[in-house]
Length: 121
Image 1 (cartoon, rainbow, N blue to C red):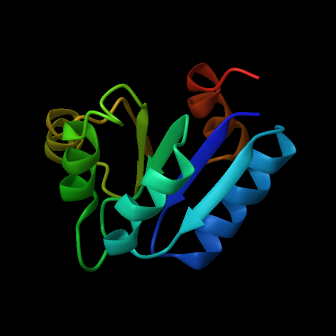
Image 2: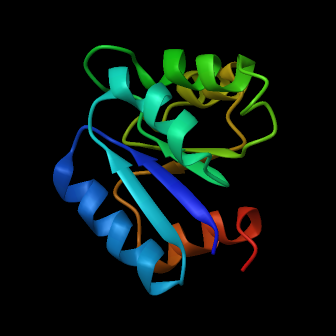
């Protein structure tokens, strides 16, 4: 069962994403504090990480770079899920190591189709 780490400071969003991931037969772990995300990622060893950009503490850009630069997660796909829909943010996320990008608000099918290529049942 693929493990997905969902990092977002909005509890409503994380609960929605958690429910969607579970419906698809994946094992979700949610974290609402970007400062705890790295530690939790190390304990969970996820197959995919979804990451918000606008968070207190470490921004999603900073956390994405930390994750991507860590040899343990260098090949772990990171999908940014953010309300920031400007080309600069998308490029900055890519430079930080993001694999893909999804803008909020998103449709349920849109979210599932975005993560599907990165998780094999």
